[in-house]
Structure formats: structure tokens, C-alpha cells
Image (cartoon, rainbow, N blue to C red; front, side, top):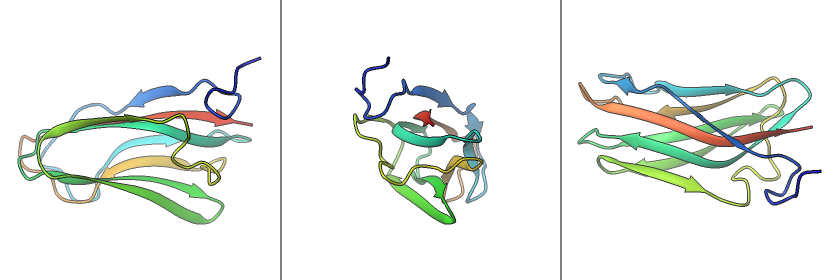
Length: 125
């Protein structure tokens, strides 16, 4: 039996997008992670990296029932954020079965700017 060190009987895993090179349109989805039928998905962390001199805004998005939830992360310039928590960022409002969790950029990306995203997630019955 798994310990409930993440609050649920699951061992989360990281999934990453490939590196995307600008120019990229505003709203470009960097990462899509489907949620399996019969499961809810929780997000315990994220990895966001970009070298765009203008920075960008990342949006982590998931659907619970018919409601769209999101967390916005602002990066004012080039850099990387690697965030993990023992409590899921969507605790109490998991991504529903047969939906897709996404990470996207809200602004257009500069030419030759590199972008990459990842999430630490787990699926629970």
C-alpha cells in the first residue's frame, strides 16, 4: 500500500513538453496531458522555462466537471521555475476524467525564444 505522503494513494510523475522555438502565437499550448477514464488528476508541481527577453505568462489549466480552472505564473524575463508542493495545487478541484490538463503561454513568443513546460501529476481512482 502506498503511503499517503502526497495526500492520495498515488506516486506522481513528471511529464514534459518538447522544447518549442519562437515565434509562437499567443495562446500556444506547450503541454497537453489527458486524464484517463475513471480517474481524477492532481497537479503537485510545475516546471516552466523560457529564454524570451520579454518574459511571458504561463497558464496551467484543467477542467473539473464543466468548470475551467487555471493558475497563472508570470515570468518577467528569461528563467526557469521548478515548483513542487506536498499539497496538490488543485486539491479539492481535480481534473475530471476524460479531460485534458494543459500548460500554455498567454503572449506571443519572440523569434528564436525557447520554451519548455512540465507538470508533476498523478491520477487517482
